Length: 87
Image (cartoon, rainbow, N blue to C red):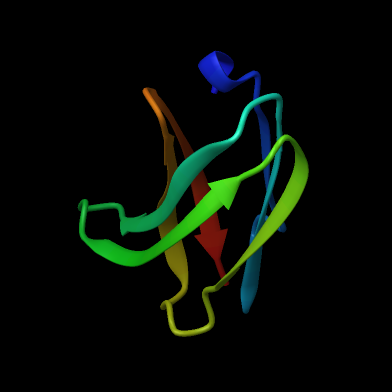
């Protein structure tokens, strides 16, 4: 998320029950964290607010079947998409 001066880390990968999304940013902004199946179906969505500095957001992925998923963060005009594995 270069426009926000943000660094994003998603862990653990592979995940079992919880997925952490760590964001360090230089600007405040609303953020939407979404989890999609590989065929594009929205499975989880979480609305949060980024504050200047570091934050850690937790997603419960315990209801997701084992497999590959995409995590997308949307903040302002920025989007980051990362592939994750749920075991």
